[in-house]
Amino acid sequence: MTAQKALSLNVPDVATLLSAYMPFLNRGGIFIPTLTPYAMGQQVFLLLTLPGESQRRSVTGQVAWVSPEGVSGQRIAGIGMHFSPQDSSVRERIETLLAGQLDGAAPSFTL
Image (cartoon, rainbow, N blue to C red):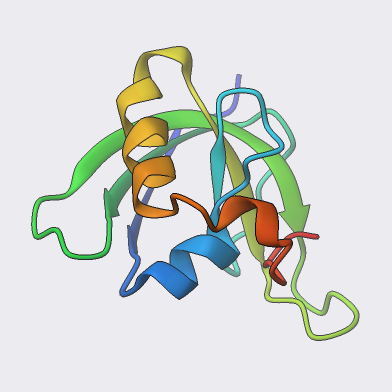
């Protein structure tokens, strides 16, 4: 089994959060810019700071999306992390911050 990786992500504003959030995953997820290679399904530990908050949240999950370095178009290299079932409060907080904006189909880091 591959060792768990630790990452940190500070989301500065709601617009960036909207681009990084992955609501199409059943437990939600978030895109994390990184040049480090990850494998699909690899477990990830994330320290996440949401807009307007100073406290970092500990989030665990699995890699569900990979955009490798050199990805075509205007995409950013990184991974999409699918939140674990015990991190539903993080998903709920993100969706509260994005209330009314998730249906707008804004450009995202993944799709």
